Image 1 (tube, helix red, strand yellow):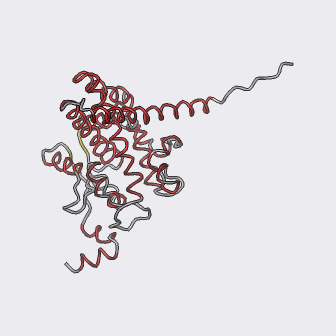
Image 2 (cartoon, helix red, strand yellow):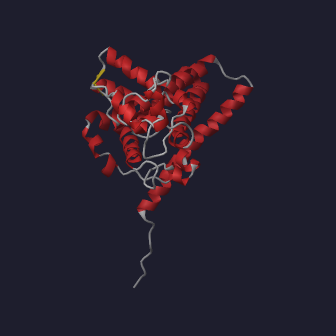
Image 3 (tube, one colour):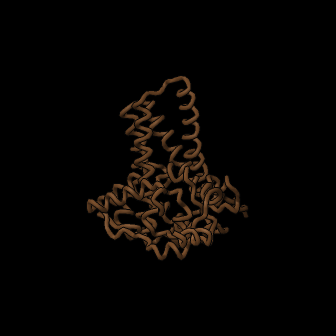
Length: 294
């Protein structure tokens, strides 16, 4: 009788393929950025390319912060279907995954923040929490994201998220050719990736803790600026559903400003705010004494 020949497990093949794709998505923008730095040193870049990079960085970055994060994951406000779709499409330009996968991963992060079940726990080191987790984490949508599949707008955007991501490369190419693709595409994606990931790594390692939380989340001014308010991460972990991460007047929160503007013109409603009494309950003791003396 012939002996059966063992065949590789399909799941293992898929896992290797996924890791290879992640490597390409991480590495290609990095290499493109190195090449762009050489060109910048040799003054081979024009203002059109720089403008494309900045504009698309703001659009895709705020698509992540306002759309993927505050609107979708934490339900910080409600809006119309077309406005929801627009913000989710903007977030898809960042090439950080589809909205359902992104949101379910972040929900798991809050459920297990800084413990061994956290997708990007700092317990495994700064590199792991920044980018290494992308090669290990197996998203569990069945546990953390089933409710997302009940929203037709979210399902539709997620279904075609690769198309939206492709447009984020095609549009700058059509406007400024290969230089547009380099700066408005690869460099912009590199910056968006690493600033987003810095919220996971830097903001769980370096910065101030103004509020008591069960994790090591911290407020970081620089990340707050670059990530459109997401760097006020200790504030966010203390009050996850708050539409505004900058809880003090000096804590710049561009995403929060955008939400306030949309609220004023009637594009969003039921915007979630934290009561002053709740803020005082969670503030660290030293801060509480200072506030009590004012």
